[in-house]
Image (cartoon, rainbow, N blue to C red; front, side):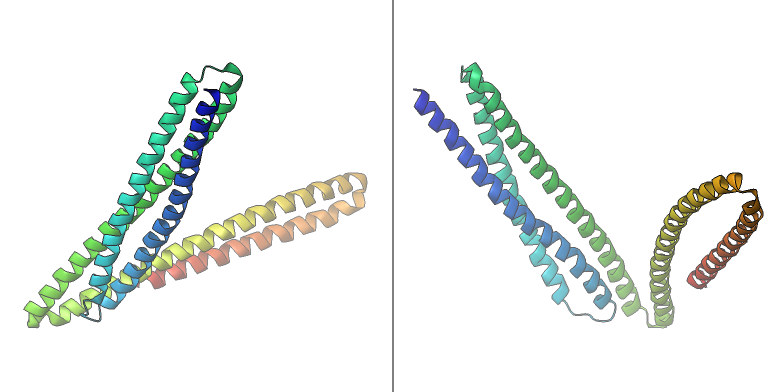
Length: 250
């Protein structure tokens, strides 16, 4: 009887490991599909402004079908793995061997953690894909309305072109602002790190100054020069930021 229950537990563990391996491979492919969809949608959006080719739409439709198919397969695998974990929990509750319950519960908890991680990763990737698809659908609707308006009113073609150029300019401005903010944050982190180093050096120099009064005047001149360099650096960063913002909104 004990041998039979032991074999039953090992069979459940084998099923769990097999399902976990399949889920791992599926989730990797699922994540690659979502990433490629995001990149291809961005490229197709840029091409759609200059071409009426319908191939990107067909590619997007194929990717949508692949997404739905893979999502269903992953959900089925998660459901099967959940069922196996439930059977393992029932087995641990009915095993009746206190000396083995701790080891069985530890193994069961590890499989539950893996299931939870896979479920979280799947829902996160799926949510990101849905957000990208909704955004692309919205942008496609806007482009379609613009093209319809442009083709239906020859008098306003010039205005439509100006609108499209202004739209591109705003997108480029947003990208430039994001890059500027990233550069500013990196500069801030660098300056914070340098300030920490300077404080450490200043502390050591103050200790030396207390020991050697003749060095005090030299330290004061160094501090004045450091303050002047900080003001100059701050001014340069401020001017560069203002020039970038003026260029972005000009």
